[in-house]
Structure formats: structure tokens, C-alpha cells
Image (cartoon, rainbow over all chains, first blue to last red; front, top):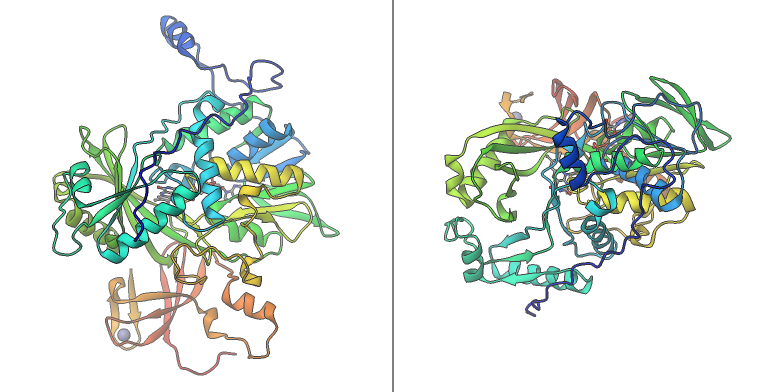
Length: 447
Length: 88
Ligand SMILES: Cc1cc2nc3c(=O)[nH]c(=O)nc-3n(C[C@H](O)[C@H](O)[C@H](O)COP(=O)(O)OP(=O)(O)OC[C@H]3O[C@@H](n4cnc5c(N)ncnc54)[C@H](O)[C@@H]3O)c2cc1C
Ligand SMILES: [Zn+2]
């Protein structure tokens, strides 16, 4: 077994060209946020803050329509404007911005994938995260508090070392913790539990969390400030196609024309794709999460306990945020059943007995777009002018910057971005380039 | 969620394992075109509403069941035994 070298990755040097919103801003409403504004507004009784984005009515035609105002749709709109100068763009959201999974996830941000394709994509996304607050002029509370994936056997240690090496090769960071180091960093775990004693952990220092809503709001504000129309309570009900080409969409707020239409609707991907006559390799499943009452700081990192399908972190507000596995039956209910809630609580109590002292405040569920190999799709759809972005499974929050960035590149240039070139829709049909991180097979129901 | 097994009666969700859309009962012929195999293996209607699925009553009678279920409300509409006869 080759031990993972201790190498802290260089903090990614801002690879972003910082665009200043101040000059040449076409339509957006927002002001720049800075310390001076806080002081000035505070002295004026905080009555001068303006809404962070406009509420425009849809225009009859746009250059690009993005269906879905979740993290991925908003980020796509932002980068279309910021990187490609496409500003005649609208995001169509059936509810309110951020009402989907982007506001329901457990906020883990990481780049610890092992397979080519995923590895460079999540690495790309993490570097975008590291410049995001400056890029957006918005505090998304990105906190690189580190993630520790526990392991419980010699075999799992080997697998963790291999993954760590893949992360290092990708240019990210990984440290293999032995028993004693793990115990020192996470003294509150039951390390000697009879079920799965803790042998160590794979530590990813640049991993962490971010405030999920703020990511949606930050991208929304950034897109709006560059002239993108964010149209809420606007459900797409049909996709218009003539002569094999997309011509626009039907919505609950009328027909809108566009020659480029992008589907980014996460759990609803199958329904929206069906409007264009497509069947996708996607099943929608429910994933639950739980949060306790606010407590004083007690958990410094994100800790994952794969053997118990359990993971936990503490929000900046103090709530212990934790979750587990899918409920495993297809569902659009955005709530799960009790057996999985019970399983998550049992696993949490096994790993971290002190958890029993906290009171659970809320639980909820989100609709996950599960792909057969557990990896996503960012590609052309087989209709001219139509694009699909889906299959994020339970891991699409950390992907938000990377996905928006790469999807915008595909929509604007017609070519896949190198970091997402392997996220092809046809890989299931051809069998080439499947990305099955778990090694269980590219089959529904296995991820 | 309670699933009424035709052999055991209504039983708790914990006794069952879902196996996905019941399209897996409609296996193409050996000579079928690659597109048909692709559709069978990967493509799904994934309906928001009524769906037909395969479930296994592993902690009960061990039978394979076809469960008709509503994916939006989690209501179980009907359950029947997989007979082993190819479906039409
Ligand atoms: C409990 C839970 C925990 C998770 N934890 C993590 C985590 O720790 N880390 C991580 O990386 N990922 C996590 N995820 C996954 C992540 O949240 C999702 O993969 C990601 O948010 C999906 O992309 P999105 O933000 O664009 O989706 P969404 O926010 O769901 O956006 C899709 C939008 O499309 C809209 N829409 C749908 N149909 C239409 C229509 N016909 N017309 C117009 N609009 C439509 C919806 O209303 C919705 O707002 C978690 C998910 C859940 C549920
Ligand atoms: Zn039975």
C-alpha cells in the first residue's frame, strides 16, 4: 500500500478574470455590496437596501432560454453573460428561485472523485468555488473546514489511499489519517464501536460546506445585474420543435421563442425532456436530510461514515445537519419514509453517541435525478438547439459552479468544455466512458 | 408505506426491496436491436404519478411482486405476483 503523501494543495490562485459590474451594466437592479454600503445603510436605518434581482415579465423572444432556476440553471445563466457575453437570456422557474434541491441539500462541497471525467470536473468546480465570493460580490459562506471520510478495515484503507492518490494526481489535496490522528481530530466519535471500529480517515482539507440558498441568490443577483431575466412562477409546459429544431417553449406565462433551450431541472428532467419527445436514462428518487436545534460549535469538519450511510456537519447557525442514503424507490414526494429516517438516526447514534442529546428540529426530502452510473450528463440533446444537464444524483450542489460554467460553454460555443467533455448522454448506449465511481455497474437502482 | 403482499397481507416497507421499474420484465429478444437493449437497460419513463415496479418481499414470503404505486403521493394502488410468464 502506498501511503498518500502529505501535500496540502496550493490554494488555487484566482483563475478568474474578475469582471467589474460597475461599468456597462445593462439592466440589473442590485448595488455592490461592501463594508462602506453596510455602514452607510446601517446609518440610514437599513431602509436603502434594494431587491437583489428584478421581477421582469417574459419578453416574446430570447437568444437562450434556461428551464429551471436551481443552482445549475442560475449558474449557467450567470456564466453565459459573464464569460460569453450572452445577455439576452431568461431563466424560467416554475416556483421561486432556489425552491428545489439547491435549497434542500446538506451543502457539502468537495473534489474527492477517483475516475477520469469526474475527477477533473469536480476539481474545476472546486477552483471556481474558491473564487466565487469575489466573482459574485456575494457572501456564499463557503467554508473549507475539511472533510473526513472514515474507513473501517484494511481493505477500505487501501481504497482510501488509492482515492487520495487520485485526488493528489488531479492537483487537489488529500491526507491519509491513521487511527491516532483520526482520534485526535474527532475525539467525540465512538472509535471502538463494536460494529465498525474506526481504522482512520481520508482527509480532504479543501472540502467543506457553503450556504446553499446564498449560492442560488448570489448567482441570481450576478445574472440579473448583467441583464439576464429571471422569471419566477413560470412553468414550462411544452417545448416547440419545428423541422428538428427548437423554436421556443410554452409556459404558464405564455409562449416564448428561442433558438437555444437548455433543460436544467434536476428531479423533473424526465418530464421536461418528454416535452421534446425524449426519454432519458434517469430515475427520480427521494433523499432525506435532518437538522437539529442550534448548538454551540461542536463539529469542526464534515464527517462521513460510509458503513452506516451517514454523514454530518454543523451549520454556521449551529444546527447539526446530517443525512444518509436514498429511500431507494422512485419518488417525487420531496419527503421520505420512516425506515430511512430511523436508519440514519441509528447510524448517527452508533458513530456519535452524543448525538442523542440533541433534538431534531426538521427533516425533509429532495428529488434526485439518478443516472445509471451515478455520474451526470452535460450534453446536446438529439434535437437541434436543445441541451440537457441532469443526472447529478445526490452530489450536484458542489457541482453548481462547474456545471454552470461548462454548460454555458457548451450552449455558447456548441463544443463541450474540456472539464465536462466526458459527461456525454450517449455513454450508456455505447458503453464507452461510463463513470461508475462505486464500481457496482451502470444500472438503475445501484447508485 | 404499507405494501399489501398478495400472499402475506399488508406489511411494512422495511420487509421489501424495490428493484425499479417493471420494464425489467420485458426483456428484449436475443436478436433485438442495440437501441432496444439500450431502452430496456437505461431509458425510463420515470413518471410523476402512477408507476409499475418490481419489489421483492425478502423479509416475508420471498415472492417477487409487481407493485403499482403513485410516485407523488406514495399511495400503493395494486400489487400482484410476478408469474414468470412473459408479459404481453
Ligand atoms: C437532502 C439532500 C442532500 C444533498 N446533499 C448534497 C451535498 O451535501 N452536496 C452536494 O454536492 N449535493 C447534495 N445534494 C444534491 C444537490 O442538491 C442537487 O444535485 C442539485 O441541487 C441539483 O441541481 P439544481 O440546484 O439545479 O436543482 P434544483 O434546485 O432542484 O433546480 C431545478 C429547478 O427546476 C425547476 N423546474 C422543474 N420543472 C420545471 C418546469 N417544467 N418549468 C420551470 N421550472 C421547472 C424546479 O422548480 C427547480 O427549482 C443533496 C440533495 C438533497 C435533496
Ligand atoms: Zn409476501
